[in-house]
Amino acid sequence: MPIASPLPRRRTVTALLLLTFATGLVDAISVLVLGRVFVANMTGNAIFLGFLFVPDTGFDLTAAIDAVAGFLAGAIIGGRLARRFGERAPRRWLCAALGFEAALLLVLAGAAGLGVLRYDDASKLILIAGLALAFGVQNSTARQFGIQELYTTVLTSTIVGIGVDSRLAGGSGDRQGLRYGVVLVMLSGAVVGATLTHLFIAPVIALAAVVVLAALLLFRFG
Image (cartoon, rainbow, N blue to C red; front, side, top):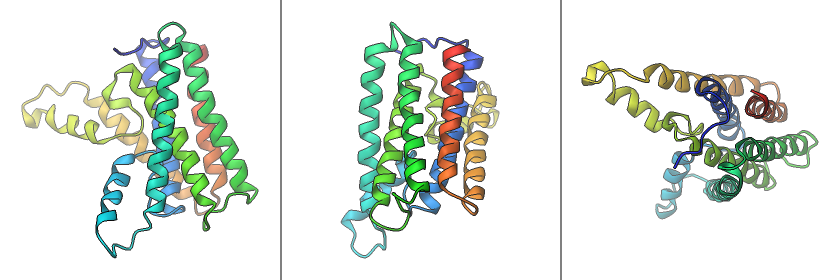
């Protein structure tokens, strides 16, 4: 059963769109800088893991395994927080989940910026796992509201909805504005993330943390 948001629907959607933007930011880094791996969108990693059974694909699958494990751990943490606080203290639940995510992103940004974690050696696996953990918490938190388009890390069902419910398919066109908005926001995050990686990397992770904190503040005080 979905958990009722402490905010009106419009503000809830705004907060979840902020989290969606953060997804685009960080996945741009993971794909372009950390190797061909996603830390928030797990569908691509599942395909990569299938390459385990095919020799000489040219993929380093260690990163994909690392990301999936981190994301799953984050989803478990997010699920436990939702069950403990979600129904009776939704603001406390959201502050705990998003606060954990933002703090983890800031720690990772600091470690990467100081050179403790690097982008081109084995220490990047810690960065990949940490980022995936953060977005596992985010996804498992966002999905509790039951807004299918706004799980914040998945676009497949959203794009399917655009097609199936379109007037071209004989549908009513309901919710299309929201769906197009979700796609546009994630694409915008990816564009910003990909552009900024030409200048710096760790600050982009810190920017994602700031965006998550903005969503947290909206849930807390909105």
